[in-house]
Length: 104
Picture 1 (cartoon, rainbow, N blue to C red):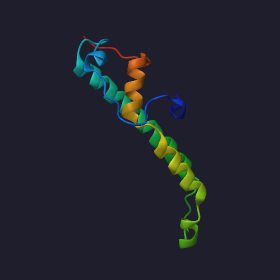
Picture 2: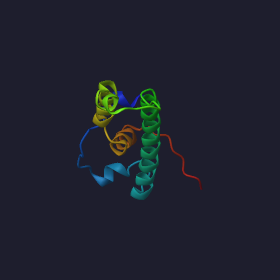
Picture 3: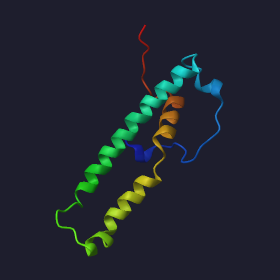
Picture 4: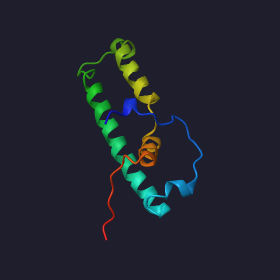
């Protein structure tokens, strides 16, 4: 999934708890589902960011190169502007885009 194109809010929004537990009929299960999805999203974003920043790593850094690397700064700023993984997971859960199953 492309997390850059999500329409999740970038700030905290007050939500009705009863709306979040409509699908599962249990708020704790809903929170567990959203929490696990949030961890997946955070892991994917971290891996993607690490791979992009590896391009800028070099074995012999000097002080001038550290301060002049604008591309690395722009990439970092872009990822900082993305919605938090928890907010993205909540949006996906509200839209019904998360597949989950309850083992019984």
